Image 1 (cartoon, helix red, strand yellow):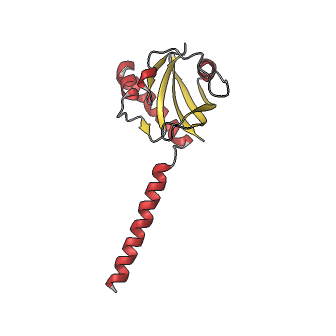
Image 2 (tube, rainbow, N blue to C red; image 1 turned 45 degrees about the vertical axis):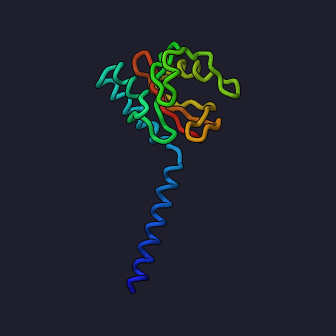
Image 3 (cartoon, rainbow, N blue to C red; image 1 turned 60 degrees about the vertical axis):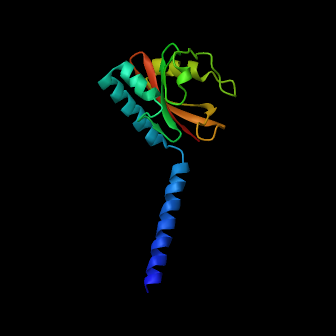
Length: 153
């Protein structure tokens, strides 16, 4: 009787562990991207741009979750904060194109100026597997910048 109970407990534990591991491998959702962008904007407003950009760009940032991270672009195309590659900070990437030739940074800042809140599709390297994949980026304008977080499809 005790062996059967122990076997059930082990079986349930294995199922739960596998479910957790599967979740860890999944990418972020669109709802999570929207929520993170809104949290990033709230943080920047509450703490100022310098502290906000530093937190977004930190290796241990609260604004990183699996393949989801925040970036902030000035409306001139200059990276102000980058959650996956701090070497991009300060660089003007207005002419950067994806593998299909899409000038996604130029499009992003134009959409930020015109719409304020939007989704944008392009291709980019997924930081978790280093493969170029389709990506959808959710962005919201904050003064003279766009705060964005994206999901891989």
